[in-house]
Length: 145
Image (cartoon, rainbow, N blue to C red; front, side):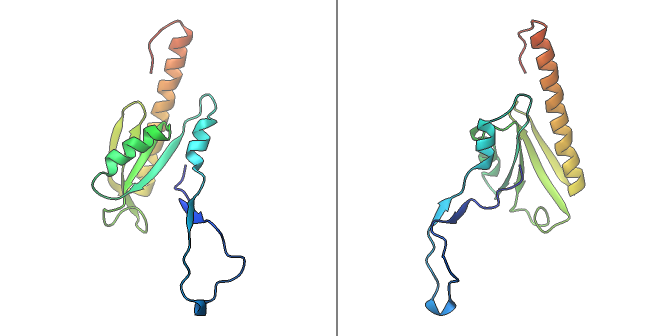
């Protein structure tokens, strides 16, 4: 899942253009639908859900861990947007990939292409664990993944 377009929207959108000469308006906001949580509630068998979190500074990793569980994701890619020179408007990024299985992989500053490769590698590994776990369960094993 890509980042949310917006977490909030105007509660009562204006029917017409808001003119400058009327002064700055007060706009009441309401939360948008949480698409990731809605998809997790309707998850298909074998479907992996991956979320992204753009967080800021101290506490970012703890918030990302909580978000991974709260949104029932298989993996979450944390981007600490407080670090200069990475992420938005930059050629490079640096992320931490968290998995529901307890994995945590730091991807050091590199090109966004390499970050994408690292994310896909983690997903391939999750898919392989799922395949192995399903095969073992079908063979009568009680080992869980």
